Length: 295
Image (cartoon, rainbow, N blue to C red; front, side):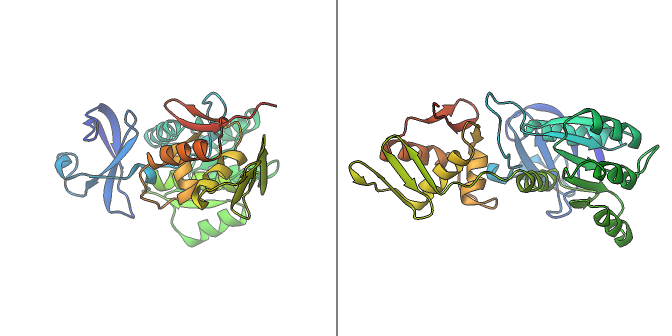
């Protein structure tokens, strides 16, 4: 890991304190700007002076967020257990920008105490920790909880990985690592641990939508609506009352690897409102959309 004091973001020009890490998959250095929430790739050998040749990562490839609670509150509370201050700080900063709340621990016994004192949704856990090693922390967590635990460590040997999974770790990443991939894995773990309630048929006033049959009708008869529009509506219905960002909607409807522009979501929302006469899809300025139905 290298530390870079101040870098001008090539996307928005923001002067930001940031860190550059090698992305072991892309063989570039990802640079994250907390102001414009964009990440750029600096080709190896050109950092940071090679900004003219930086390739911008599509926004839809950013860390996918499961949901914001009503009012834009953090979507999950994450315990970051890492004794290296720079790494801990950088991971927390990145995940906070994604909407999470983070709690930092730098020693094993501190991690156990913080876990018992807070409602934690997911743990990012290093192995080589002061006082108590990560595997012992994992064992302590598993005595009382099945919360997702992602091991993030420099230890690459098979024996340590097997020991982690035998201790019921949910995922394992080695350093150096990509912030984007870390975010994606955290999202996947949270999604699996908090599955949305499935809805096959939904009614709103005179409107009835059959998501399994991809059809919708009201008192006037069958309504013309596309499959993707119904997929988007289903996502909103299954997360009723929660704010979904455009990025979330893209990932939930078009898939994590989609290169569709996020503004396409606005068009689909407009179509749903017009075709199905829906006044319950609310725009949350600066974030995205939510389905709000009066009880």
